[in-house]
Length: 237
Image (cartoon, rainbow, N blue to C red):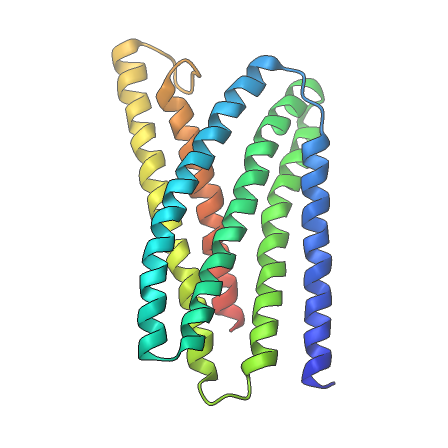
């Protein structure tokens, strides 16, 4: 098989994977929810996660832009472009996974309450599948395209490293930023809620509990998604 045929094969597999991602997202989105209290709590978590991710990504964009300019000047403009593309895909993967998680969290809770453990497991499995298929699909599509377009160049290894470095930068910020946020909220919820106010652990009346759940979403879901994508790209390259 020629390089072009391999590229077509990888691209086709990646597109099938992305189709599965959209199918799973649609399935999760269409699951019924009729518990107003659960919907209210989930909306706070989702709004907080989106707000945190917006601010975090804003900082990442600034830093990634500066590094991309340095790479473009020190190595080549193409290397800077591939660094930027790697960072964008990594952020996209984390965002898709986080969006799916904030939707699946609510639907899993409702399914566990109304239909039992098996149905709750399936809903959570579908939510996790969004991240898994996103990582594999974007990884195949991006690396397959880079190999097809630039494998004959003398600086191919440098281009590949630049792309992986962009993914790693986002993974670093997402994991560390989300981890600090969630641990700070966790400690605050325990100290103020349980010790000072006498509120039970994980009680939604404690605002720090909502913040803790927000941190879990952005750190353990969006951050983990970017981290897995970076590891996947690095391992395949």
